[in-house]
Image 1 (cartoon, rainbow, N blue to C red):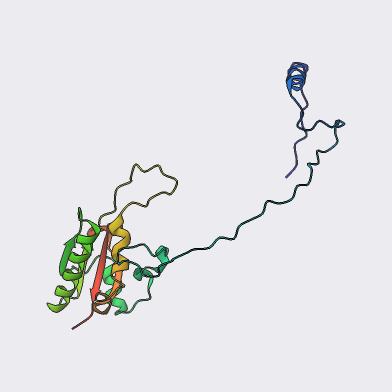
Image 2: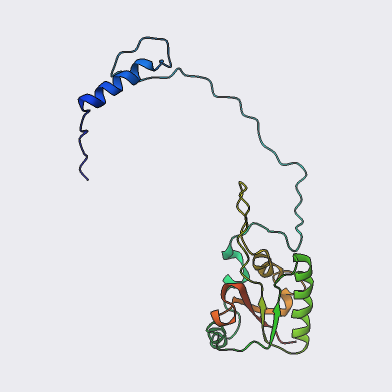
Amino acid sequence: MKRRTPRGLDPEEQELWQRVARTATPLRHEATTPGQPFRPESRAAPETVPFSVVGRSDTALPYSNPGRGPQALPMAAPISMDKKAFLKMKRGKSAPEGKLDLHGMTADAAHGALTSFILSAQAKGKRLVLVITGKGRASDDTGPIPARPGILRQHVPRWLELPPLKSAILQVSQAHQRHGGSGAYYIYLRRR
């Protein structure tokens, strides 16, 4: 790409620049010649204090955010069920045998409801169930750390990885648009 040559200043712009330059005070008191680059004095770097974490806890609550990205969710896991049945489920052609709607629940209430729903569905011999979390609302939080919308949408896949639900579940996948899209999950259960 060809560089453009500077156009230079008009006489009016040059006169304005001279007025501004006369009112400016130099940063250094030493005389400098025009066109000579400014070389700041070398200063010693400030002393740094090593950072350490004291009293770190490795135990996480079942609804805490372990800080993993979406690629670590069980939906990104390899297919562990019949591929034909998985593709039928992903296309929304399989009808869920049970449905749980978690809209409006707190994280604690939703975790309890999800656990009892999954375990009772497996006990009844159901294979495909639908869990609706909703997509979440955008918050008015203008803090320095942005909050992602949809607390349940984030926590439900992680809860499904924990005991006792992990042993009951064969596959987790985002639902098809007709069953809720990104605000719902298909859960394919293991046989009893």
